[in-house]
Length: 129
Image 1 (tube, rainbow, N blue to C red):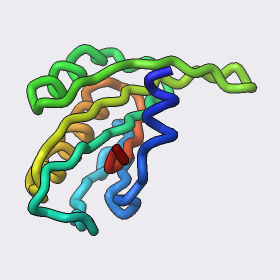
Image 2: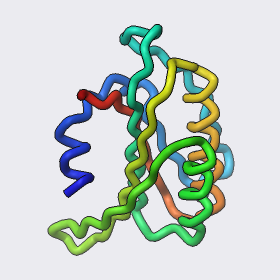
Image 3: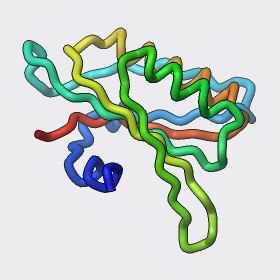
Image 4: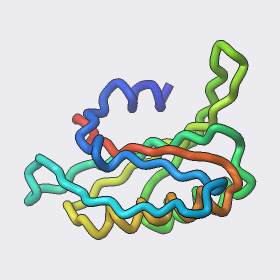
């Protein structure tokens, strides 16, 4: 329910910042530029929605990294009509605008994908209060 509420209240502002990583391609490199159209002088709540196409071997490591970066992660499991299971990690925190933070988090997610052995994708969203 928490995930559904989050998804319904999130405004996706960072579509150019959406990313994905697959450890199955050795030449994958993520180098993303972040732009936000928000009041940069005020803290805002940032959400990260991470979707795994299969259960990652090192999910705990990713959750730990998010916690270390000040995010509060929670996990939900969704089974599609075809029976395919997706593991969705939603994390959020309140922060000031800092492009380095976004880029560092994208690098963390890419590294975690490579370590986990599963494909993952993510997007950032500003949480509407």
